Image (cartoon, rainbow, N blue to C red; front, side, top):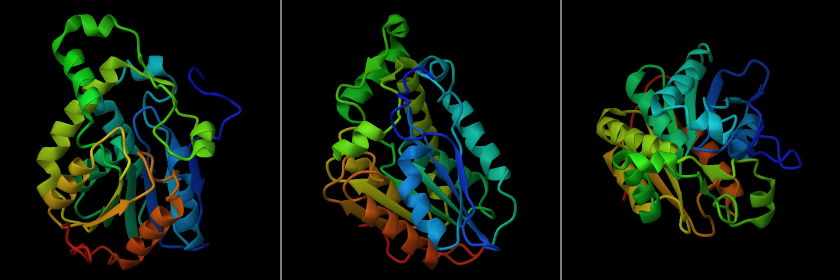
Length: 271
């Protein structure tokens, strides 16, 4: 596949069965230009607790060329289809990384009786200034669509060099995809007060892709409240960066706190 190095980690979709007869399921949604790889450590941790973990590859993420032909509606439709395919469960958790966190919030707003909790990792509610400029150019300047993809200098936004080298994400971002991400941000921002299930928001203090302020704002606007965690050594992909063990532990602990099909507030409101 274009943009993917076969010597890197496996970015394929996965389905970890969890404990035999387990009644809990987690849907894990990756970020823009990413893959299920960025959520694998979290999935393995909660699968050990008996949770079935399903991580699809969202539409357009086969290559940068395919991504340039998709919209945020396509990404959300892929996430929606994956949620419908999970079947019945005692508790359904959605774990979203970056753009996947936007999809998670949209699904929770659409399915208040189905989604029991959200773990939102480095949610892409607000891009850093350069990303915002790229999105604006693509949305308002037709010639921007003729420009080459935005190359990721130095690879993905991960501090841990070993994980950055292993991450099979795309090495470039289509201008159109950034514009679509901004449109998705606007759509989800308006939905946040309708999300009533408990939520955990995790941000990397050194994130160079999205702002920590945006993550805090998401936590404050969620209708069910949220617990906010800031990981001091992590950049954007908190699920695979230096604090990945703590990130996975926070998600596992959060899942244990969620009532079965009861909703309710998270244990700690956002600060």
